[in-house]
Length: 242
Figure 1 (cartoon, rainbow, N blue to C red):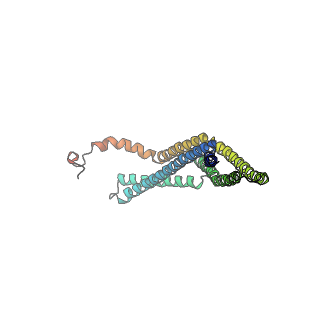
Figure 2: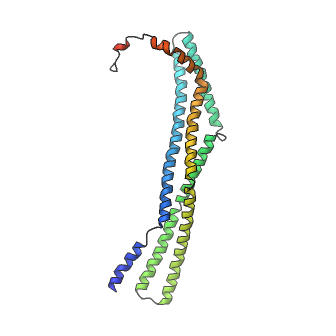
Figure 3: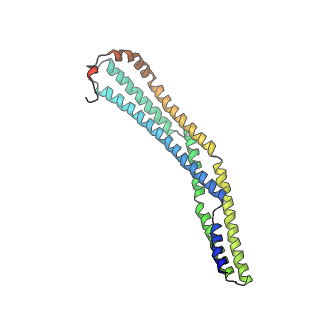
């Protein structure tokens, strides 16, 4: 009898592992959320980098124009660059004020909605854990009374209570596992959307710069050879220590 009493608790403990499918999809979805959040941060970082670049273009143009000492062709070049930089920032602002129709912003909202869907599912983990704890407590109670040799009527009542807790827990677990799996199965589409948004945002920034600075770039390319032929001091004697 004492041998049986030693084995019974061990059997109970071995039975306390969560459903493997639940653990599998729970981990998979957690990894998806982590990776997707990194993608969102990357998208936001790219936009911040472009915003700094746009502002930097405006600052350089303004400094060049306002600080250049002579009233000549070079100053007029600076003035033209200021005008282009202002037009660039105005274009950027216009797009920011009407984001609803932009493909990138629509995708961004969809990605964040998917992440929120994952977070909402993760909030249900506590309820599943509580229901499992209730079931296990009722099962342990039943096992204790069974080992004490309690009469069958009392054990039947406890067994009914235990089975009710078990049924509730297993139904909740099955439902949540199914919804976790359904959400996980969307991940390929969502990651594809994140990739699309990143490339489009990259191209949008490049297109804005090209649209407003194309003429300046062409002029700079024409000046390139002349600039390289200039003798600006004794360059051969220049070192990083200077």
